[in-house]
Structure formats: structure tokens, C-alpha cells
Image (cartoon, rainbow, N blue to C red; front, top):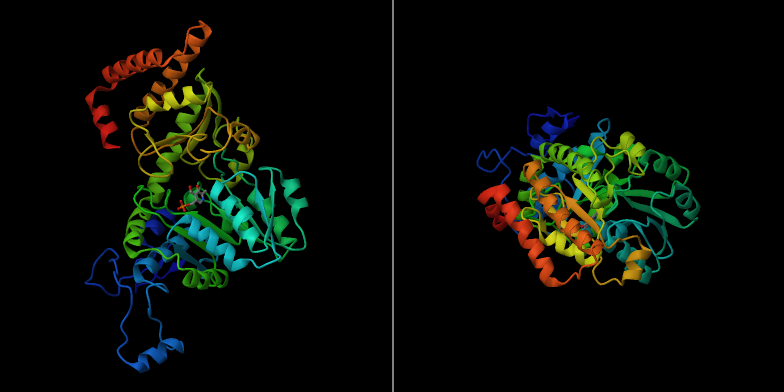
Length: 451
Ligand code: PLP
């Protein structure tokens, strides 16, 4: 696939080379090997004639920071090359935003109008659903939420007014994997419906939805694409004509990406294949190990035969990703105390970075919902989402062993009919901490402070 990486055009087909070399303009800026940060809000015109040439399309150049920036453009070209179907790369483009949510909201504002209808699978990022069902609803856009994995319900939900199906794959937090070729075939029977796939959890390394027939792919680049927990960004990738509609909406709505963040994103993208391949391997190992642990009621990971979408995953994913969700045999408070025993994994929202992050889903993403509301949408009190980082897999597993030790002590006490008071918990935690400290030594302690 030819790309505009430099004045010498290069045939790029393999993802590791695309990640490092695509979208790297070489024509200017001090012969720098890396793309410089073009830190400017506006661009100078040498004359009014040049301004006319620009507006009348005789020259291509930048005009004002909200409409474009060379560093941001370089990142967009790299992202387009990463997600492009290998046969038709030339007509794929990407548009960057200041966050994943800015990408999602701007894309939907660009595609929909009053009276239109959107279909969403029931599982996915809570804020996306809230945007469609609350905010877009105020502008006269209706929606139907269908149960995750129910292809028949999805087909039934299509109405004459339906203009978009917006699905994640894999989904958050149960990692449901959508049969994208089947969904694309359904969509083709309804030519006015666009299929938008939020592939944040998959990345172009594990899945390229455009190759399966999606119209647009969306990523929160805050996660794997940036990969270092140090930036917020979002991108929409797809056919040039569709992306240019969304770019026009961005230019008006204003959710642009800062060039400093674009530079960090470019830097992060170069190691994307390496990072994701390693995270795939680590997560699969952790998932298999968790399945053998008595303190774990259920593990959700598409790479496991026990996952409801394992067969679909085998067809549409080339790796099952770096997120593992699991349910502890523990109530809300015990799960919270168990996660507090982590010395390596950091309790934080987000995923996809080099640091292992862990969250109790009921207390993080779904905080504020009543227990009955959580139960209604299937968020168990003991549900934990783990995003494996790039630390040594043995250290991540040792950390989870500390979590499981708290669960084991709590269930032992419950079985013995002992009072589960705070003092006893503290003793148990101290015992776990002493045992782990002896095992892991001072290096792990330092890691805890560092993360
Ligand atoms: N899509 C998915 C699947 C997410 O998990 C998130 C955030 O967690 C978003 C979109 C929103 O991205 P951002 O936080 O970059 O706005």
C-alpha cells in the first residue's frame, strides 16, 4: 500500500513498519527524523494572492489551528494507514479529536439529524450511551438499545429512519466480541445505515473493522494508541468522503487535538504493535491462571474457550487484547478491600497503557448507581477490570495473588462465623502485606510508589 510517508514513497503493508514509518513527513523542519511539534494557533500568508490561492484550492496549506495542524495531520495519516483495509488504503482518511468522546459526539452530530434513529448494543462505554439516549434525544434523534450479542434483536431494531449502528467490539466491561462480517452484511441490506465501530479495546493490531465492512472506526487514542497514560485523544477513520464530513463538523464543534498531544500520540503509535502483542500474551496467561483460582467466580476474556464469543473472536480478532474482566467471590466491600491489597496494579480508570491498571467496575465506572440499577445492567459487585501493562507478567500475577488472598481470608472468616470487622481486615491485610513484601522484596515496594 503506497503511503505519503516522505518524498520517497514507500510501499507499506506490514503493521510494524506502518506504525513506525507511516505519516512521517520529511520535507521540512530542520531535517529532523521525528515529526516536530508545530506549536502555532495560526499560519501566515505571504500575500493576499496566496490567501486567494488557498481559498480557491490552487494550493494546499494550513490556515488556522482549528482547521488543521501539521503535527496533528502526521498523526492522522499514521492512524489512517494503520486502520486502512490493505487493498484500498489510498481512500482512507482519519480525523483526530481532543478525546475519544469528542470523536464519538462529533461523528454522530455530523451524520445524524432530527428524526433519525440510532441502534446501540446494550453493553459499552456508559458515556457513549448517555450521549445518545439523553443528549441526542433532546435534538430529536431516537435510539434503541439492544442486548449485547443478540444479532436477531439488532436486526429487528432496524427501522426506516435508522441511520447508524454504533457498536463497540470488544465491549466494555465483559469484552463481548461482535460478529462484524455478519453485522456488515445486515447493514448492506439497509444502504442508508452506517456502521460505526468503537474498536478502542482491539486496536488496529488485533482487528481492523473497515476490512470487515464497517463504515467508520473510532478509537479513544487515550488508551492503547497513545499507550502511556499521558494524553487524551480520539480518532475517526474511514472513507475520505465520510471523514471529510466529520472533519467539517470538528472544525465547527472545535474538539481539536493539541499538537503536543499529537506528538505524544505519534511517539506512542510507533510501539503499538510491540506493546499490544505483548499485552495479548500477558493477558491470556493471566486469564488462564485466574480461571484456576477458587476465589474467582468467572473470568471474561475472549481468548478463553469459556467466553461466550470465543468462536467469533477466533474469526475476527488476531489477538484477544490486554483487558481481562473477572468476578471475585466477594461482596462490594470485600472486593474493594481486596483491590486495596495491590502493590503493583494502580487503581485508576482507563486502560491500554504501559502501567497495569485495575478497577472495581461498580465503584469506578458505575459509581453512583443503586445496587438494583447495577444488577439490572449486569454489573456484579465483585466485577474487576484489569488492564495489563508491560510489567513482568509474574509481577502482575503476584499482585493478583494478593487480591485473592484477601478474598480467601474473608470467606474463611465468613465460614467460621467470625465477625468481619475492620480490625480483623487490617490484620489480614498486614499479614498479606508482610508475606508479599518478603516474597517480592524492596523492588516491588518502589514500584508501588512509582505508579
Ligand atoms: N470508547 C471506549 C470504549 C472507552 O472505553 C472510552 C473511555 O473510557 C471512550 C470511548 C472515551 O474516550 P476518552 O476518555 O478518550 O474520551
